[in-house]
Length: 300
Image (cartoon, rainbow, N blue to C red; front, side):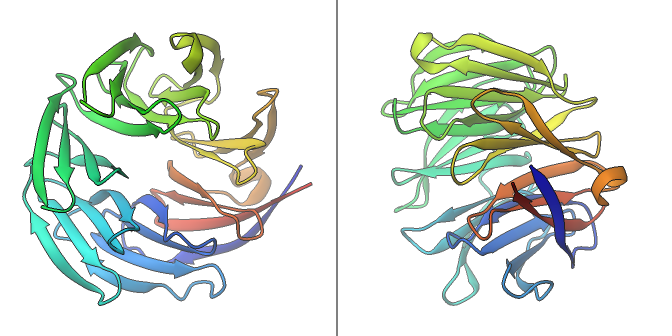
């Protein structure tokens, strides 16, 4: 496996906390500590377009394809919904005074992972709260859906992973998973495995069809692991960390294939916060506290 740094996008004035696809293979949104939401196109490097200015830091965004809308979670200021076609904020609601760490959209609902330990379920059609699910005494940091089982998982700063039923939002299982905060939960593309990471720097994999029994526990990084992303062909996955590195793994063997860091590939200088693996020339995108967004080509 080879890694080539393709480009660096600079446009943010503070840490970049999140990046999400715009549903094309080549476009994506970024947001961070400066409150800017910027749209980028891999075909036109470093020509970012500012689409929104949130009133505070943004840790989470989600794309609602059915409404062609972008949900923006503001730190302590609730939600803004951007009408993408008209490029204007069409809805805003102070649903919470706490930080919003993740937003996931599924089956007409938006699920918000909130810093006060609650998952807020919002009905998208009416833009009203359907349910508050008390998950933890500490922050809920991540949410992941599994269409194969109609479940969703949450990771929280109480070191736990909770599995919920998507239909009635009932709790099905609690996994005491990590020795510190759980920062990321992601289901494998086939829905058979749940990947979890956290402040303890471990990557753990759980077998969904074996009552979430543990498959493996890998001490994958030196410091907290912030995110996981799967390659478009599902053959590989990447992890990123507060240790400033990105690691690429074989999804079948779970063997480490490549380390992307400052020494080897002119990687990030500070914590790498989020990843997005695109179908555009198999390019992997990373964002960091160093205010930069880096684009990596992964090839054999």
